[in-house]
Length: 271
View: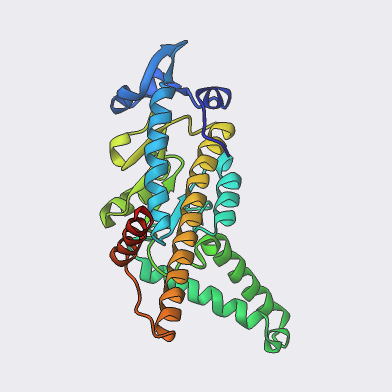
């Protein structure tokens, strides 16, 4: 996806806020005007905030850490879960269970239970169980998958959260804040942007708006993953080069030595 433009946001309805009577005064700096009883979001502020959020989240991912997507409202579930799966990032789109971050050890126990059930269902002993017992195990597995399927591969706390609706996901935001985990969030005119680290003023109810912002954040995460892979490849090549030089009996050359050789060569040419 190319860099978002003002027109892209306009076409997706990112600028439509809530009724003026439902506003949060702390969103005032991000509101452009009032029209027909509805607050209109300043899209220039949206672009600037999105740019800041994108750069920050890209650096987090480049360092090798995970970003958890959180969006339990119906119109956001599909696009958020699909983007998170594509990027191999954890996500919660069904229901946020209290303590999912602050009581992560308990969540890990549930993940282990889910894993053991999946393993058991692949074994021959499962087929030998009574029909009623198989049904109970299957239902338990479905329940755990629905609640924890998006975080099944999460072995430690995420480094950041991307949240679609601050008011709806207030428990997730509060838990992340308590643990010092930065929160990137879409903030509509009825939200408090001070609750999150990187507020992105935007319509968090319309599917097109949610999709546009989510995919933009996803692109930044993808860029971070690409840069991390490039960094790892560069480090591996450098290590292989140094290992080859050492095996050949030549001392590994550092940047200073290489610069000196280039300078010497230049002096020789001038003579």
